[in-house]
Every structure is written in C-alpha cells, then in structure tokens.
Image 1: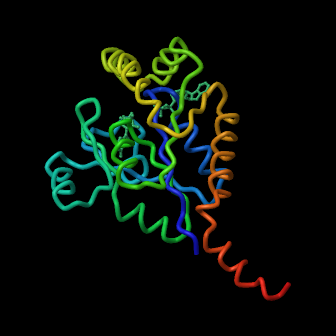
Image 2: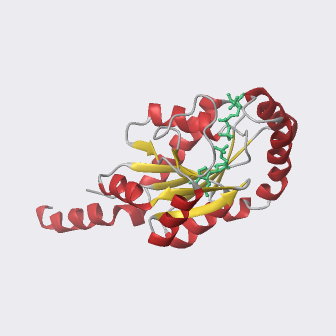
Length: 205
Ligand code: ADP
Ligand code: 5GP
C-alpha cells in the first residue's frame, strides 16, 4: 500500500484554515487532520481530543524532550505541536494527513519530510481578514489585533510554500486543494512501484 501524503496548511489567523480543513476532510474520505497538542487554554466549545489535546506547559516540554513531536513552535505565547506517532500511523495506513500549522512548524516539516506538500491559504484582502477575525469573536480585542498584525510577517514566508490558495469562497478553496491532492498523486515519483509492476508485465505484449 502507498504511504499517504503529508499536507501542510498555513495562513494568517482568521483566513479560514479550520473552516476549509473541516470541509475538506468531510468531502475526502482518504484525508484526515492531525490533532495537535497545545499548552493554550481551551476556548468556549473546544473539546479535549477533538480540537486539540490540551496539556500543561511542563507536559508539553516533556514531549519535546522525548522526541514525540514531528514539529513544534511557540505561537502567540503558547506551545503547539504535531504528535509524530499519530501522523506516521495514519500515513502508513494509506491515509493522507493535513497539518494546520503556523509558518515556523511548516519550516520544520519542509526540512524533515522532503515529500511534504506545503499550501498557504490567503484571504481575499487584509480588510476581509480583519472582518473574519472580528466576526469569529473567539478572542479579546487585544488578541485579535495581535493576530491581525502577525499576518504581515507570515505573508513573507509564502515563497517557502509549494502552492497558494485564496479563500474567497470555502467551496472553491476546497476544490482547489482537492485538485492539488489529485495532481500530487499523479507525480511520476509517487508512482514508482506501480510503474515497476507495469514494466514487469512487458513480456505479455
Ligand atoms: P483560521 O482557522 O484560519 O484561524 P477560521 O476557519 O476560524 O480561520 O475562520 C475565521 C472566520 O472566517 C470564521 O468565522 C469562519 O466562519 C469565517 N470564514 C472562513 N472562510 C470564509 C470564507 N471563505 N468566506 C467568509 N467567511 C469565512
Ligand atoms: P489557535 O490558537 O487559533 O487554535 O492557533 C494559533 C496558531 O497556531 C495558528 O496559526 C495555527 O495554525 C497554529 N497551530 C495549531 N496547531 C499547531 C501545531 O501543531 N504546530 C504549529 N507549529 N502550529 C500550530
């Protein structure tokens, strides 16, 4: 069985990563998202083990020491990281895994997993980004501002990504990411085994 793809989805807070990822995973049975660990407090409505695995800082630091994280970063003052085992097990089952992570984490993935596919999700405009952050209403005003202002630095990282997708409309953004997945699965380098089998059959002709 072919190992599943590893996709990374980054973009400024409020761009719509969570929304797009959820819809994508609902539509694509072979795709699942990884549940990150974080030291931040749960927001209203967030469930442990569903949205994140919520851990105290000391336990997070233990995971770093044990090498249990594929990547990790401090974002807006809290730790966030991707559990290595969970991702490897899913990919070994042939499932494609999508990581919704920040640009620091994406950089680590690029160095560690050469075949990873990095996608940057963008809002149609910065004005719309601000409207989405405000409209979501999950943060206090000063935190909303901090996240909005961080977008400037994050946009500078785009050249390290393989694809850019504008999230003007959720279903269009989802369709574009599905098209990226389809194209990536057609790469010659990802079909070496099937091509070798085909060449073994040459004697039939
Ligand atoms: P992120 O995960 O990137 O921080 P969210 O998925 O939480 O962003 O989306 C931020 C807000 O923007 C949410 O209220 C969501 O419903 C809204 N949103 C997401 N995508 C769109 C879109 N294409 N058009 C309008 N609103 C959107
Ligand atoms: P939030 O607090 O809004 O859930 O997430 C804040 C930021 O942390 C977002 O940019 C999100 O993509 C990023 N993030 C979430 N999980 C991870 C992770 O496992 N690793 C890294 N590096 N960033 C993450």
